[in-house]
Image (tube, rainbow, N blue to C red):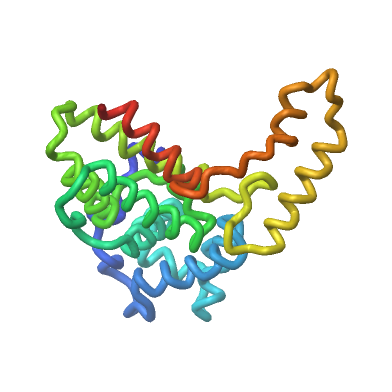
Length: 231
């Protein structure tokens, strides 16, 4: 059954009506799966591994879930439940969305598997719906069509996912070792630069002007993209 045709897990009872009395709840199963994903990525999350973490058999999980896809849907929605509830205080819509983006970025960095899992989601849960509502409430004063605003939410999530994924040139700011690796990569790149063949790279590496301190790259990107979409 495809993700688009299967019945959302939220519309089904927490467990099948027949069979032994359940030993665990869906929330406990999701919590165990989240710990596995936080430690080993999404590949570490299998029905067998989750069952082992709960000291039960893999078959018993199918009393609560019909597939691993159900589990991923629940995990993503549970993670989004960690976002602050409701709309922020009244103010500039752009500041409000930047605040939402920062909340999302912190969430995606706490759960590095979330970007991948969110792309696989087959159904939206209550926390996901609440997130959409929060974003649309912030954009309520804007005249753009609802479809454009929903596109902005999708683009915002894409930007968050991009910045949440560490790369040699985009390391987490709170990881000194990652920053050192970034400096090593930059030094290696500079060693390959030929002033004649690469005049622009040479200028970039020798530019004495310090980078702008505020707002940071993430905020500048979010603000620039949202202004282009909604202004």
